[in-house]
Amino acid sequence: MSLSDSRPGTLCTMAPPSGPLSPLKKLQSWGKPNQAKKITPTETERCIESLIAVFQKYAGREITNSRNTLSKTEFLAFMNAELPSFTQNQEPGVLDRMMKKLDLNSDGQLTFDEFLNLIGGLAEACHASFTRAQPVKKI
Ligand SMILES: [Ca+2]
Image 1 (cartoon, rainbow, N blue to C red):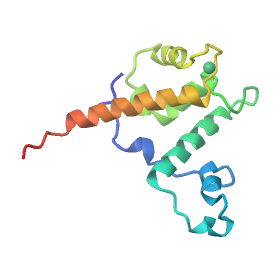
Image 2 (cartoon, rainbow, N blue to C red):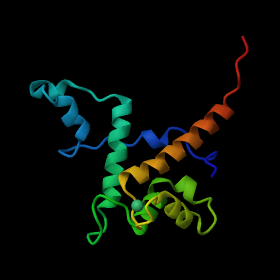
Image 3 (cartoon, rainbow, N blue to C red):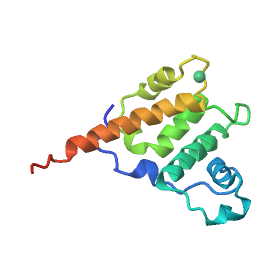
């Protein structure tokens, strides 16, 4: 898997989700109902919210499938729309093999936990690529 041609920072620059489905906002405002509007989410919190929101967006596409898991069709839609710089450079069958590898219990569905393994693997590959690209400073 190579992400060397992917754009740095794109994984965490999506707009944060809004509306009543923001669990971090609920968490932040827990016990502080009057201060909820004053709290600004951190970058890390926005990234977590974005991951949850994008998972829910694609998991909820097929009305015949669970809203809490990604079917293979939903997974392919996610990969092609959200990670085009990765998917466009892959050989045929790579996404099918990725789905099988990520689907740890082989039920044909990706739970959020299984989905996070994909995100973790991509983040790890991006991090390795970025650290290789940075010259070592000698003092
Ligand atoms: Ca599964």
